Structures are given as C-alpha cells and as structure tokens.
Image (spheres, rainbow, N blue to C red):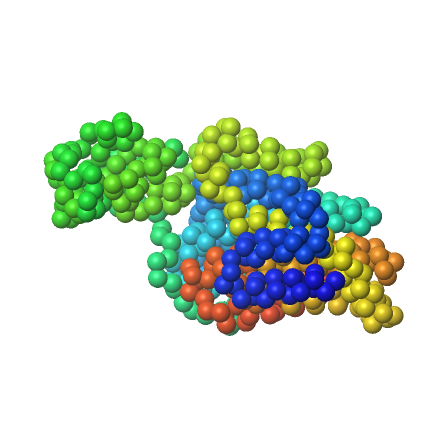
Length: 514
C-alpha cells in the first residue's frame, strides 16, 4: 500500500507540474509498479491490450474522417447561415452542435472541427471569439455524457460496473444525466457568459475561406471557374523560397508539374500576374489538382500561402467522401446502440471501412491517432489494478463508510464526487477516473449498495473539468484561439462545476438507486 500510494502521489504531482509529458508519466507509473513488485509483468502491460485503448484508437480515425472530409465544418457553416448574427443565437447553436458532435465523435474531435467555424461566425457577427469558444468547449464536456461514444470514460465505467457484479450501462443511458447537463451549461453560458467572459480576439485566428475562390480570381485576374474549390480538388498558392530546387524553372499557365499531378493556373511576381517566368525567390504560383496532391507538394521546395488541408475542410457542400463518412458514423452508432458487438470491435471496423473506402488515407488515419493519449490510458490502467490489489481501495472505502456511511449512501457519493472534482481540475479527467473508479466500486461493495450510482457519479464529476486550461485537452484547444488567460476559465467554469456536482449528487441516485 505504501509503495502504491507513493507512486500515485508522484504521478499526481507530475500531472499537475505538467513539465514531464503525461504519456511519460503514465509509462513511468506502469514501470515503477512492475519494478517494485506491486503488479506482475502481465498486469503492467495489460493496459496496452485493453479494449478501451483499441476503442479510443478507432475513434480517433472516425473523428478524423468526419473532420477531414469537411462534414463537420459544412454542418457548422449551414447552421451559421441560419442562426442569425446575435450572440445568443450563435452561442446556443454552436453549443448544441458541439454537444451532439461530441456524443458521436469525442470531445477533442468536436472542438477541433468547430473552433474554426466558431471563430469565423464570431468575426462575421462582430463578436469577440472569447465570448464563444469557452462555452463551445464546456458544451462538449456536457455532450460527452449523452452517449457511450462521448468519452472513453463512459466505456471504462461500463466495464467496471460489470467487473463489480452489476450490469453495463446502455449506449443512450448516459443521456439521462447528459441532457440536463447540456441544457444547464447552455443556460449558464447564455445568461452568465456576457458578464464573466473576456472580450478578446487572438492573433492568427482561423480564416474564413468562404470567398477564397473569388479572392484568388480577382488577385490573379482570371475567371473564378479556374479557382473553384471542390470536395475532391482545388487550388493553392505556393511561394518560392530561398534555395528552392525550382529556382530558374520556366513556368507558364497551363503547364503540368513534373509529376503530372498538378497544373499551373497562374503565376505572380511583385503583386502582378505574369504570363511566363523563370522562377525567382518570392514568386508565387497558383497550382490546381487534388487536395492530396496539393498537400504532398506543400513543403517540397515550395511553401503554401494557405494550408491546403485547412482550405479543404471548409467545402461549399459535402462531397461523396463526406457522405460516406456520415453513413459509416450512422451505422457505427446503430451497432453500438444495439450492442451487436463489443464497442472496440465496432469502432475498429468503422475505422477500417473508412480507410478501405478511401474516405481518408492510411497516412491520415495513422496521424489522427493520438499516441500520447493512448499511452496515458495504457500506462494508468495498471495503477487501477494496483489500487485494488494493494488494499488501498478497501482501506479508503472502509474509511469513507465508517465516517460517512452512517448517515446515508448519498454522503459516500458526495465524498467521492468532491474527490474527483478536485483532482480533475489539475490532471486528466481520464487519469482521475482511472484512479478513483476502483475506489468507488470498492466503496459500493463495502457499503452493500449498487455500484451503478457511484460509477455514474464519478463519470459526471470527471466531465466537470472546467476551472483550469490544463484540466482537459479541449480546454487547451480553445485557449489560444480565444486568447484566454489561466484565470478566465473559473469564472464560467465554477458555476458549471457546481451544476455537474448537483447532478452527480442529487440526480444520479434518483435515476440509479442505491
């Protein structure tokens, strides 16, 4: 117990300190537990073969497919064109969209897809992006409680419930608390947001590419049909840098590049189009071709003015790849809801189908998988095992039962929820739940109550990581685009955290009785 507690304390300090990468800390935890004899070799590496790791890897690929095909950006643009220009309508629409997307593709995927859309909508409406982006992130946290897909924590607690002798949670069962959380967070953002959120605009915010084709046509004095942006192909400006291998090459509109993948649409020198040119440093060439070919060209002797991948993700309408991605997502959700196969298998099949249909390339799929996240999960799972096997879970549960169990199981629940809320503001909510979940299950067993309310309550509390930017990746993703400072998060985050605490302690035991 002493060894496990010491390793856990060092891990928590490392997570809070945030100097050592979280993945290295997690791997160090697994290694330390094994070297001290706290867990066996099989237990130390069991996390790497755990279904939750495979599930999460597949989900990264599905999220990338929805984002890379422009489907999520197109949905955002469609909603943006219909909601009007008031702050309230934009905030409500984006928060609801963020919650729904999170329920289908994960918090990080939804936020990554919607941040550029939100900044553009705010700019058009003359609203500071800082008034919109934090509510967007908080809505994603609430939306993670709508379905099993919202966060890996949902799958984890469902598996722990089975291990504790109870039934698993259903695919849509999380929505019983998720729906009130979404409604409450939206209400708080609408009524409190204007008073507590700053008015700032970040440098280098995402650009609006809706008029990009017309802008290029005007600057190069060519017809707009030559600069049209489609789902499969488009145009990109490339600057000739110093020491480029293309210096001195003779180029003209209509010629093909050496590999035959791209065609030269126009050439510009000193801010004016030219018909022929022997390339010099600073010349700009406008190339047309497939988005994949344009992306491969970027950095290969030329520098893109605008990232082809960023322009590509804001289509005028969804193309065949986006339709295919949406269809695969619907089928995946249906299979998960009907419990046709284990969640990890369903998500991995969906990811494989997306690659097989060429919705995304294998390289895109590989890049989309966040290895640090998988390492944190795999590395911290042995800690959950050690907390149980070393006797810490039993000791903590006995203490909680002796001190709080005499009055009501709700007091036990409140003690666990407060613990998760405190830890979750400084370390990963996934790591927090991995640490506390076995204790919660042990508390339920010691108190002779159902583990379901305990596990659902810590799931809700784990999603309430609102007070600091380091609490979740989603908070970090909006910090720079929203120009937020460390102290900006708690002003709206504290009321949201109190809402989550009230739901975890007050509503959860009503829906899942002890």
